[in-house]
Image (cartoon, rainbow, N blue to C red; front, side, top):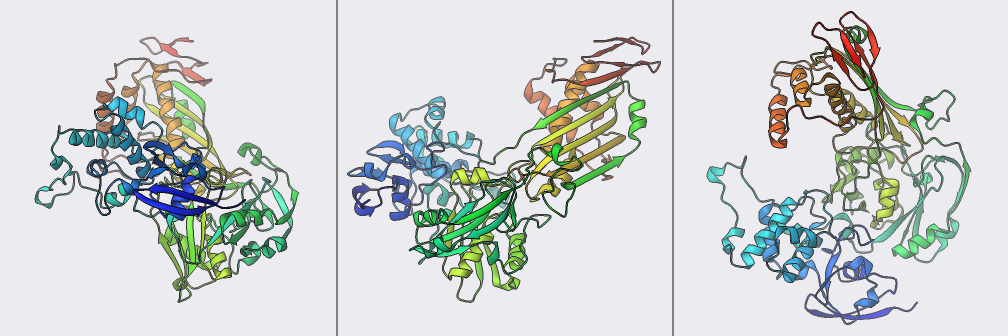
Length: 627
């Protein structure tokens, strides 16, 4: 199709540029006009990071074909204030600390600007409604709403302009003071460059061919047609790795690209670098891969069964990591308990949903140093792994951490940086890779799905005598952070409670699902969800207030954990009491019951009876009823 000639007014200046008919307005602004404050977060009109004004109307530029921009007046975040200055609203975002990672903030500023243009006196509820089309994963939104209200009041004269000024810190004491973020101006103005915003002269664009199979042998890869295409400068596979092909956080079990077989749908098999993204994608279709499907495992319990298909040869039982912890005599503890409650708890895989898709830039500098620019959350470890992969001394490998547009643990893994390095070395040119949102969701690590079986024994006054916890986690196809997640889950699984007898087992299991990795709370969420839910159930069984059962068992100063760690100062009771006050909890209020349980009550004479809903004891300690 022929190119389009786009004539428009962008940020007050007339422009006339050629554009490709398949481009979106977003692509035109970012790639042709270099206005990268307009971010590409989802490509589907959901996140609002690409918001711009078109003829005065707030619109999502990822949904607008570039041809629709013909003759339009377009305003981006860069056009809200003179260069080097900030608008009142941008200053308010800076003042209130409304930006964290900052990736969503230019779009959020545009939506907030639109809100105050439509109604300069909008109240907080209207502000919330008008910003409803924009997503932020970091802030919790409250500071953003504060910023819009502050800008509204300054614009309307309710507050002086000095309300936007920096607050002086008394006597240089910054702890506990409201201090401005140093990087906020670049974030609220759209000037800060993330990896996907960065370009270099003579840069190539990388695209990745991914496996359609969850588990299969690779019998052959033919890249000849792709390599022969005009505009293609390089094709790489596992055969291009010169050194030790393996990376990971704890176990280096993942190759840069699939070597010999694929282990999950979406695993990288080959990569193409071309003069533009479209050519690179067309070249991927020319690569011929012959697969021999293998039996696949999608359930960790199936993967643990004897005779199950083996995903990694070094782990014939498909166990990535097992963490066992023992304290006291668990059976003695249950024997001394009046009530024993057993329950299963499950958590699902969760997408990190950071607003910035994975992106990176790789090049070899004039001194032969292989350089990777990416939002890596673990760049020192990545540097050491990459040096072994590309077989270069560490002095010849450099990682530069670009601003991280949200990570939450999900950018701790070196998923694509190795491909950038190999391609930059092969072509001698800078190479950039930017994931689509679909690619990010389908191929990168999620929170570990888990099933926890928890058994707790308590005396009738609510004191925990024994806790047995067994958690099975789906670690997916590669190890990534699974070992660390299992350790943290085991260490924190018993909660902040003084329990004399503890048995904990956490297992990370290989499957042919998308790999699981680090995510906020790093394993503690799964086991703490089970432990705290279980305490509510036990409180109900014993007729105790849920806050009270926690107070009874809370660790105090000088306590020892089930891993034998001595704690000097324990603030749990203070936190618990603050939570009780803040929640306006009505003492003795019932808590909701969970699902099916296996509960047992023991009376004063040692008679053990099944108890599915609750137990009542007489004053002399005999079991009166087990409902």
